Length: 305
Image 1: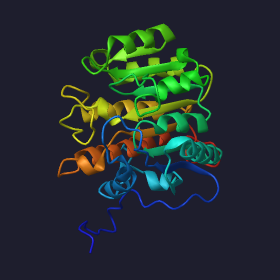
Image 2 (image 1 turned 135 degrees about the vertical axis):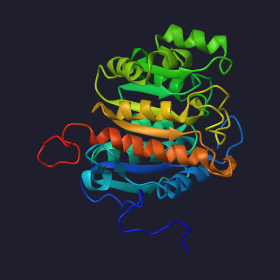
Image 3 (image 1 turned 90 degrees about the vertical axis):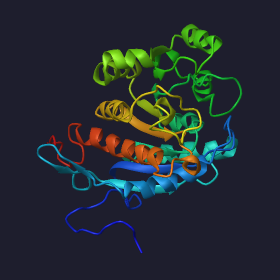
Image 4 (image 1 turned 90 degrees about the horizontal axis):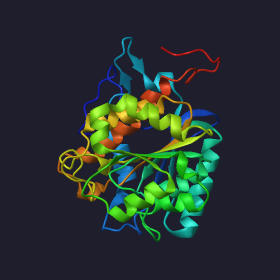
């Protein structure tokens, strides 16, 4: 028996069907975890996020109020089985490539941060924006290396913007590596000082010069109090409302064609599930940004309210 109340006048988010033709947005689970630098149960997170979505309504208050399920065609493509390792990454890359051909926005549910590599490549991204406390420029293959791997495979580092990089969570060597590559770094303190709208506008202008942008939402950019289910989150990170504002601001831009939500370990969350719930809200914020684009969810190209 469901523990959630049933009210025909209070619809719930999630529960979207498999894609059948053209859609506005599609979810894809990528439960990677095997190369994580710290032990993680991130493979359990896509299912947990889907469950958490049912706790929320798909309604933007406006005014006027907008039901995302009425305004957008939203689908769920299920999970890629075992997306770790070269074969798993190839499968993930191919599946994302299929989905970007039918959707304006592909939302990948991690899994650890290693999925950013295959997701951005499958989406054909020419620019990258990360919301992350860490550079992810480590050597080797892990959840700490996707940005370096993308650069080595040809992504122009001058089209990478890293937002929320935190003190005491990185090394001087990796900070120098980012600078030497020409990556734009907007540290955590600068985000607080300037605000989400200004920071994201700058990031989009840099990352979006050549076209398609991938948004990497690493939830460990948040304060550990709101994201205890992220192994690498630290006290003093972004507040939940700050992350949500950044995500919605990014998704409003039509150059953002894909996003991932990563580094949440559903098996290590607080009893109230606050980290998984925040990840689910990031899904809804992406959809809220999408519906604000010109013509989103419309066959005739007219702008929605």
